[in-house]
Image 1 (spheres, chains in turn orange, purple):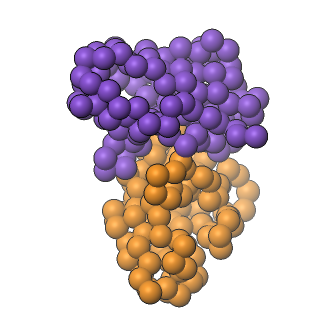
Image 2 (cartoon, each protein chain N blue to C red):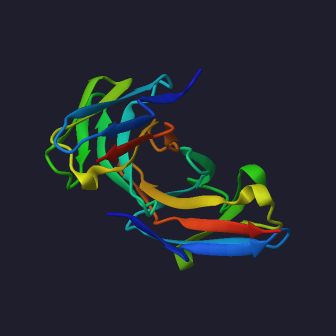
Amino acid sequence: AQSVTQLGSHVSVSEGALVLLRCNYSSSVPPYLFWYVQYPNQGLQLLLKYTTGATLVKGINGFEAEFKKSETSFHLTKPSAHMSDAAEYFCAVSVGGNNDMRFGAGTRLTVKP
Amino acid sequence: DTAVSQTPKYLVTQMGNDKSIKCEQNLGHDTMYWYKQDSKKFLKIMFSYNNKELIINETVPNRFSPKSPDKAHLNLHINSLELGDSAVYFCASRQGNSPLHFGNGTRLTVT
């Protein structure tokens, strides 16, 4: 079955600094990859997704991620952190024809003023 | 126009009780899910239904019983609640390989 690993349970950056949240996946077939954000006491909302095609995908709130098959990675980046980006971020993977979607353990992003 | 709605939002109950959480989606999706999020924020898939048919049943105690009366509804009934059942339960839906759409969660506290 497919799985994801998020490196770093907690990432802290200064406001205006680069955000890099790491995600590596494991899948025997081409994966569908997703990043979700969860603000306190809320559900998860989709940031961006990779299905097929362009490997650099852009999402909401200035986030983007690049699918690198050779590295089995799908890291999330944002050039300049904003205080409002502080939240929990989850990477997820599913495969075609399979309704199973698995999540990483999450990374808590803290943004310092 | 809520897409995935679950009730109740909060549920506080005592050990040994039986409780249910309801979920409805108005997106026309074929597949619905229940996920459990523990205190460390880890999201674990519990069940998935596709067009009312159970397709994913993880290693969940049989005290948990999902029921899908139609493809827009997926309810979760929990018997004999235990302290370890305290968590946030999320309902979600999707169509094919599209992203999951989540409800806002039900925070279950067992005392």
